[in-house]
Image (cartoon, rainbow, N blue to C red; front, top):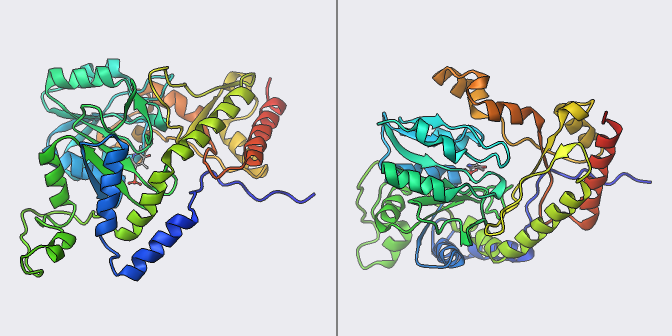
Amino acid sequence: MTEPPFLPFAQPDIGEEEIAEVVDSLRSGWITTGPKTRRFEADFADYLGGGLYAVAVNSATAGLHLALEAAGIRSGDEVITTPYTFTATAEVIRYLGADPVFVDIDPGTFNIDADKIEAAITDRTRAIIPVHFAGLPCEMDKILSIARNHDLHVIEDAAHSLPTKYQHKTIGTLESDISVFSFYATKTITTGEGGMVVTWNKEFAERMRVMRLHGISQDVFDRYSSTRPSWYYEVEAPGFKYNMTDISAAIGLHQLNKVDVFHTRRTWIAEQYNKAFSDLPIKLPSLASPDDQHAWHLYVIQLKQEKLSITRDEFISQMAQSGIGTSVHFIPLHLQPYWRDRYGYSPDDFPVSNKVYPTVVSLPIYPKMTDEDVARVINAVKTILTENSR
Ligand SMILES: *Cc1c(COP(=O)(O)O)cnc(C)c1O
């Protein structure tokens, strides 16, 4: 019997529609920000229910930077976030000379522990960045109420959260100041690299539009379609180069059309895993409460170390030997050399993150997986854990 090919941890699902649309862009001559980026922004805002502003960028990292800049975060300010995230969430705070203040996570959801936020607020605190880990929403009512009481901005890192719902509302439409989605290759929809920033606030949207393209008051597409001479532009600020290209937007337009189909498939895979793994020595990921919706960007299991004779790292190598890619989300930021050394952290400063990290494994969960792929993952997990339980 021939071995099936290696099953990667993540893979984008790109169809012929995306390919044809990219070819159309290449032939049209509009390869940078142009009509397709505009359409993608409009479609994205419509998908969220309409009425808000959507600004397309070349990554969620860029979007988070623009969001903090628009919110007026400056050198010396503090921004509260979670250590249990990708470094992008916190690095953008440093771009502006401000400091992240980490608040440990809830051991069940791996989201920021909303009950510990208030104790971390100082007179330098200006904003909170919640991260909806794996696509499970944070306790946004508590976070938004703390922010209101202390006059703080809320910028949601929604990189995992398309489509997440909190109390029947789609993430991106809550009363937070700004939310930022990622279209990185592994995320729930992709444009290769890309992101979308959404806000109800017109001034924030205008500032982010200007700052995403060199601080220029009109983008190239506007300049070419306006009555002013096409060579003329005005620089309002030292902006950035964060605009999305039409080549990326061409992919995004069709990925967005499939977002609900993709989500249904991810949810189905999560359900198969939940059923198959219920008797194993692992803790299954938290489910969304009935009023919420999990995006299932990640499916993260926790090994019950006391019931197993292998470590997490050994489990990962045995999965690889069985032909299955896995990953770890996340290496807590306070353990990373830069963050650890800059702020003098020790592992136990964030005990929950520190305890969870050595036990977690992310399993493949993406729409391109066939039913056979899902069965293979289930068999491998069951076999390895059964052979190594005690
Ligand atoms: C992927 C990710 C980002 C960064 O997204 P990019 O589009 O790659 O810049 C930010 N935050 C979290 C939590 C992520 O997982």
